[in-house]
Length: 161
Image 1 (cartoon, rainbow, N blue to C red):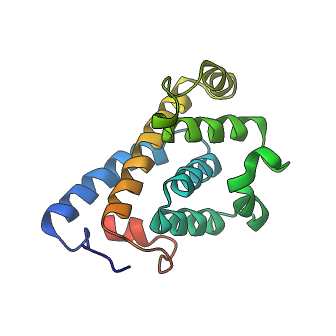
Image 2: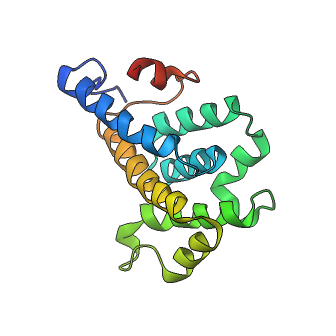
């Protein structure tokens, strides 16, 4: 599989990427814990089969101090003991917010209640925005076959700088 189009080298794609990154900065600068942001991004990317985003968020999380054990267990977080209740709520939210077509209600009331139990209004808002953004990023990368494997921590931030 070859990359179909390099969005970063195309004028329209580059403009869009900068604005998209600016929206992402709002979430990045929020009080939602950075570890939670990376775990949520990683889980949604796994569900969407986005190699580029899995590569990016795994490496960014590791560079920020996330352990290999936790990164390896994100895909099986329900059968793991390494995630806090708050992180479990965020991961459930990420899954339900990503699999909208699988559930007519989207995010369940139970998952929403768990998120609200662990995150304040600003953090919950950031989580909603993050799930929307990562799903959009996954779709962009999967559509153009942006492949994982070559990402280096800080690369996206440097390109958007």
